[in-house]
Amino acid sequence: MRASLLLSLGLSTLTSAHFALNHPTSLEGSSIDESKEDTAPCGALVPSLASTDPKITISDFHVDGDYIALHSGHPQYNWLFRGSVQELSEGNWTQLYPIFQQSGLGDLCQQKVTVPKGWVGKKGVVGVVGSSGDGTLFQCAVVNFVEGSNSNVPNTCTNSTGVTADYTSDATLSALVGEDVQTGNQDNKTDESAGVVVRAGGVAAMAAAVVAGVMML
Image (cartoon, rainbow, N blue to C red):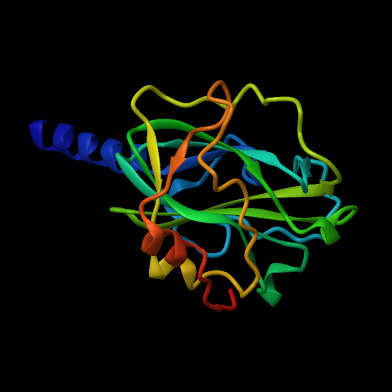
């Protein structure tokens, strides 16, 4: 009996260490298959931009600045935000924000994540990749890219007490994007009621954060 209890506790710890993409709405919705969250490029499901499946929620994502809201069950994650307007079998991901490290469990929301203006009017994918003690984990959202900035803070955009973020370098994450990089809001200024403040970790760390490699997934 005691052995079974210990096994259950171990599985619970493993599950809680994964992450959820809360905004834009995850491709898997609230039914994330955490056992496949380590499957590139998007976890259990691979989106098709040609699909008209009504079960898939398609969110608007504003090219001049929108929110990415996450829930982390691990005390530390390095995050990569990336996007594409091509079928994912073709690869060619674009990095949407410098790689940064979250410290602290719970909710994190980053505002003013930007995408190329040429994506306005196109259907595409916003992908989040997290690197932690569990390895590399993936979630994606299917979105319509629209003009302007999102002036409505989503109700999922919250930051848990004690959560902090710092720009960092991560060779594993950098290898998952192409050569294009959207620099986003790197000036450490943010609406503290909405976005988390990402602090610069020095010139070297910032420079490394925006260097991208190439990998076709």
